[in-house]
Image 1 (cartoon, rainbow, N blue to C red):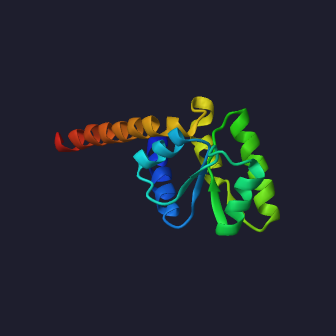
Image 2 (image 1 turned 90 degrees about the vertical axis):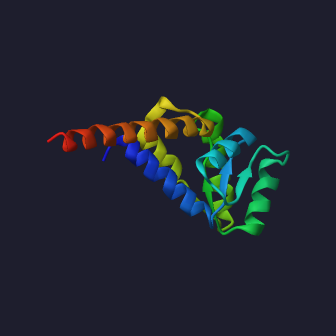
Image 3 (image 1 turned 30 degrees about the vertical axis):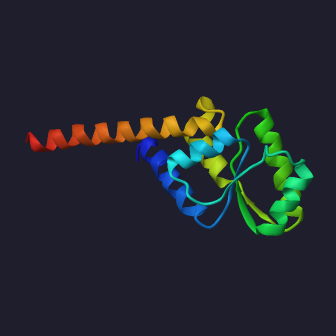
Length: 141
């Protein structure tokens, strides 16, 4: 499977999971990027004026599981670790798999959630182009 196909599959899986599990992001642009990808479920923005403790207390009162999907820069990594530590101590499961999977697919080529949408569009273009090339080869035989 091509890397681009894996990225498309990744996005489809995140959309599916988000139907029942909220995704935590850093800012409004991150939320907008996920909406462009097709997420319809709850996306919760960290930078909404609450302190880290207040933010985690709200999550702990309302959810048993969340997907942490913060940026891959220093701030995002620190926030991910802090939120995960606080919520886990309160019995909330923090799914970090989506951060890890995307990083394994793209490495350091993107550093923020808002960069996923253009990457997704490029992946679709490449997969469609490869399909067209392969289809043309088969029909010329």
